[in-house]
Image 1 (cartoon, each protein chain N blue to C red):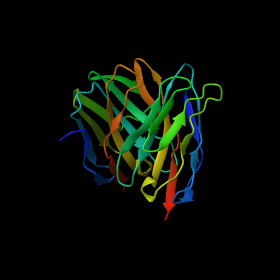
Image 2: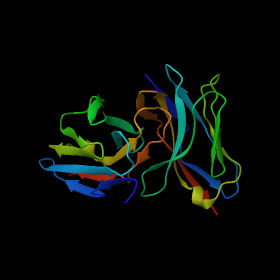
Image 3: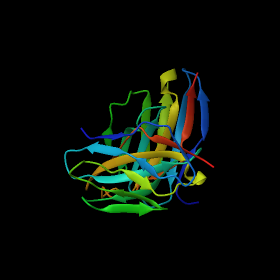
Image 4: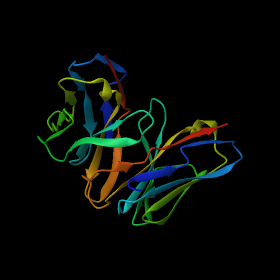
Length: 113
Length: 114
């Protein structure tokens, strides 16, 4: 079955540091890939997505590129802020007619001023 | 009110109690989901409803019973739960006919079983 593996947390960085959170996936077809973010006390929010190979999703300074050859969708940001502290989830969905999301375990990110 | 709303936000129940979680979406979506979020585990999909019909039950114990009376409302009825059922229960909705559309999540119900 489908699965998503993302780097174990927690991750602690200083403000303005470069961020990478690794995500790899296993899927039978050609899934869509997502990064969701969960701020303290809130539900999950979509951060960015990519629907086909070589697509780059981007939002709020975060980027991730759909790499079919390495089955990866790593999240990056060039300069993190304290407000980026949250839990980040990588996820996939199989596509048309199958809406369910398969999630990774989540990576807790803490940014120190 | 817009988005996905879950009530209650927090719930403490005994193992012999019966309670229900409620989810409501005002987004015009056709698909609704229940997920369980436990510490240090991936989000677990529990149930999927498409156009009010249950299309997925991920081997969830019968002590969890979903109900979807219409496309806007989703319930999770709970009875004779175990302490290991304590978790954050998240409801989500999406358009329901494409796999690349965004799922919108509620804030969750933090359930503690004592």
